[in-house]
Structures are given as C-alpha cells and as structure tokens.
Length: 312
Image (tube, rainbow, N blue to C red; front, side):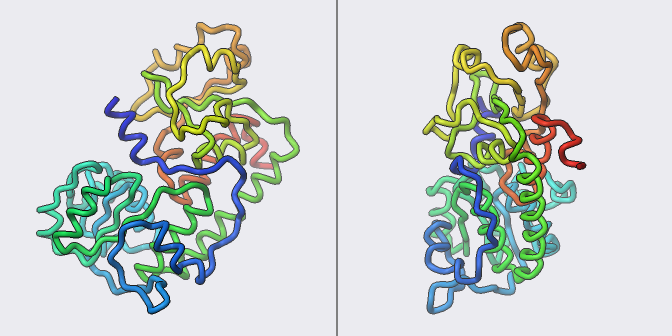
C-alpha cells in the first residue's frame, strides 16, 4: 500500500471532457490563479497578480515541479529536492530535504531558500502551515484537473522564476502535438480501456482525473469513467463485467511477470483474446507536467491504435 499511496500523492485530478487547448493569458494569473494555487507567500502586484522575482535559491517538494524547473532551465538555482525527485537524472545529485509526506523542515530552514515550491498533491496543509510559521517563503500549487491546469501551473511557475517566454514557446509546441493526435484518432473506433494503477487492491482512474482525459484524447473509453472517486478501488468482477478491449498496467515500481500474466487466465476478456495487455511506466502517466502528459498520450495512443497512427 505504501507504493500505491505514493502513486496517489503524485497524481493530479481532471475532468473527463477533452481539454480546451488554449494557452493561459497573462490576465489568467490574477486572483483566480492565487485561489487555485492555495497557500502562498509570493510577491504580488496590487491587482493580485504574481510577479517574477529573482529567486536564486529554490527548493522543490514535488517530482513534477522539479522536472519543470529543469525544463525551464533554472536547475542551477534549484538547491534541493525531495528523495522522490529522480528525473531528470541530474536531479538525484541535488541536496535532499526528505520525503513528500515528511519533508525535513529543519534542513529546509538551514538551506535558507528564497522560495519553496510545494504541491497539495504531495504535501498536506499541516506541513505547509509549519513551513509558513517558520518564516519560509512558500508557494503551493493546487491539484491539477486537466491539461489546461497543467499548462496554467507551468506558466505560473515560469513567471515566478523569470522564464515565461520560454514556457509559452514550449507549451505552444505541446499543444500542437495534442491537437495533431486528436485529429488523427477522432474518426477511429473508440476502444474500451482499463488502466490499472494498483494491483493489490485493484485501482484505476475515475472521471475527475487528467489520466481519464488522456485516455479520451487517445481515442479510448475509460471503463470506470463514471466513477466520482478520482482513484477508486475496483473489483476484479467489475473489470470482467465491463470487458475492456485493452488493459494497461501502470503500477509504481517494476511490473513483474506474475503481474503481467495475471490477466491471461481470464480468457473471455477481449483484451486477452486480442493480446492487448501493455505495461507503462507510471511516472509517465502520473506526473502532471506538459512533457509527461504528451508522452503518456502518445504511448496510450500507440497501445489503442498502433504506432502507425502517429507516424501518418
């Protein structure tokens, strides 16, 4: 359960409809951005808009934030990360400040950061409040609900570290990739998908997750899309009854041959009949960054429709 708990901590959440592929404007970084971001102590203009500051000592408390700091080219200013921040590989060499649930507050204080970036998908409010009470300058991002939210937060982060132009150019490219995939699959038959996020117990993504959104964009139909619970536990009987045509195993850690073979005994499942059981690195699908989102979308599109769809 520890691995599953970690998985849930790094996940965001999203609605099921396809995203509106619009880059947030400067005006979108006003009061709404501050409300959605949650707890914060950052420089603001009189209108409540977040302004860039010359942060030279940054600490990241979430793997997705660490990845984005590297994407923005401010890794030299990033002085410390959590034990789980393992990508890109260079991040492993950074000073460590504990785990997601239990960051080492004393260590953080001793490093004298200009700002700490946290996430409500990784830290609880008690931890955030403790850091604030210690006088730490902290900005906490909320849980993301779709690609639009992921883009919004990426631009917000970029603006705070002075790399907004770079972020906008980067996102423009990712949005074009998403649109192209959507165009290629929108006329193809929909495919019923079970995406396994945990094996014991069985867990998956419901409708209020950006993972469900990715499945939709890839031309799939999540067989648990109606679940109001973001990451529900489901029964084997429910999966069999819904009879997915494709099963994707995306559990944390190395997937064993035993896990791969588990579904083979259920010969009546369409996914088994079609030999459509795939494995996917959970980090690709579970870390809400623009890069991971598009990478996950491409992978799932290949699983559902073949690699040729993307190369046409």
